[in-house]
Image 1: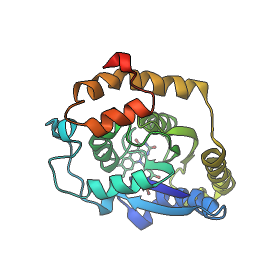
Image 2: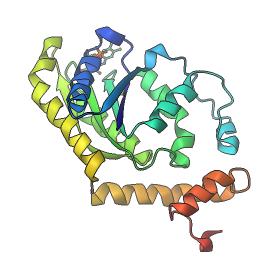
Image 3: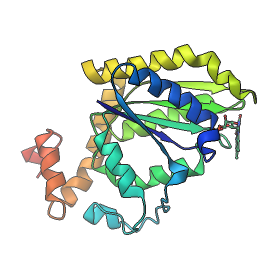
Image 4: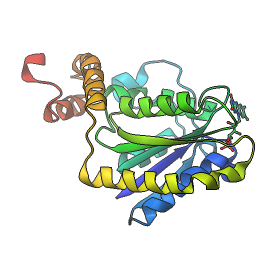
Length: 226
Ligand SMILES: Cc1cc2nc3c(=O)[nH]c(=O)nc-3n(C[C@H](O)[C@H](O)[C@H](O)COP(=O)(O)O)c2cc1C
């Protein structure tokens, strides 16, 4: 089993968020899970220009590092989104990455994985950002098992005060990925999303037959929809 943390702070190894998500990953390694962190600031990801190219072909018109990150997301069973709060939101690096996921969201490419979110902040915005990150995971078809926030007040050693919560989150993630996890509210939201995106998959059926037939196999498109 593989877990991937996507880390949005530009502070890289000095990042408090990276330290916090590393605790969650360590707990998972203790359960035999292979883990990896992607520091988005190390990757060149060009912002989406809404050209619609990906919708027609499944590939972005830009040649950058996004496909290599997307491949690692595809390979992972567990996805953790980790971001500091920057002006009440995720970092720019994280948002640019999210916009490039629009096609994966429409076609539910990463559906069926398990995830959670991790956030650090000085004081404010933690609850809102964790909700947003888990909402993005649900958009992707990833079932979430919660999250972890710390408001450090500027004392980065405060991360240690939530070590036990980080370990418990890591173990909860592994159990959910191994045994399955049900949450009727998230399941209903994800079904509503698929109903919304179904028209895009139907419309592009001839251009993207592999995606279309994956939706048929998943039972998300019925014969009557054709
Ligand atoms: C550009 C910028 C914007 C920030 N905005 C907020 C904010 O809106 N609210 C807050 O409480 N802290 C804010 N912070 C503080 C960070 O959220 C906090 O220091 C966080 O733990 C940094 O994590 P990192 O070391 O992983 O980058 C901001 C920091 C920066 C650099």
